[in-house]
Amino acid sequence: MRHHLILYLILLCIFGLSYTYCDAQFTNPHRTSGFQRAVDGLIKKTQAKDLQPASRYEVILDSAESCASRHDFNGAAEWYRKALREKPSSPLNDKIFSNLGICLTHTGAIREALEAFDIALVRNPDSPEILTSRASAYIVVQDYSEAIKDLDSALAADPNYSPALSLRGRLHLTNGNLELASADFIELRSTDPRNSWGYSGVGRILFSQGNYDEALQMLRKGMELENDPETVLTLILCLMEKNRLAEASDIINEQISLNPREPDLYIARALLRRNLYLIQEAEEDFKTAQRLGADPTLIAELKKEQKK
Image (cartoon, rainbow, N blue to C red):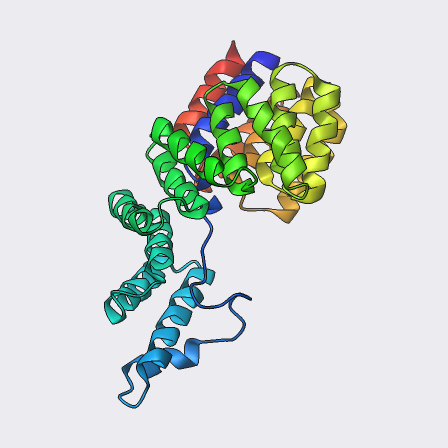
């Protein structure tokens, strides 16, 4: 059973890593405490003739942040463009170009995103935040070598920058460089003990090496910090390898009740049900996972591998 489950983890990492650009960190250019007030009512004021330029600029930036917080990345990108037109020589523009790049990455406009990050880095070439955000965009198009270069540069500028450590560790894991991945995850635990990847990343490596008991300990610690569906999934697969099927089933069902739109959980339950010869029920779970956005190629590979 272990062979096809490890294949699944590899496939999951390859297919899933393309979406890690959510690690990119938005920077509020003019607030230090984050977005503290509703700004929807202020958006109309951007057209008001009696609004002072400085206030207008703040409203535009607040509007961009408001859209981004609602995951309206197209809207946020337009507001950031307005801010750049409003003050083309602002000293804040490295942050604004970076935030624009993050929004464009979320919308899939990777070429434009990379151009925005490039401009931001001309203005602030050693920013670990901008370098890590650009690395996330490279990952979306699977240009892992350029992503690694950016992450290396980010960590050269700030060795304790945890988003870069976490993302580089995941990249090394995807590329099969387990020793490098483990080093990053262990370092992450010392620099940012609240980052779940410091534990769950090591847990995945231990799982791939067949160290299931140690893997379970690391994965459970990771889950205590963040109830991440992929960490939950790896924990479930580990329990299946230990033949603790009842425990795995309980966790799957609980997690599906908490995250009913998470496709990975239905895939895990499908694998478990196939292992219990509940073929029809497993097929329904595969269909649900695909309907919720799971890659059909991944599901086809899993079915083919499990038949061996």
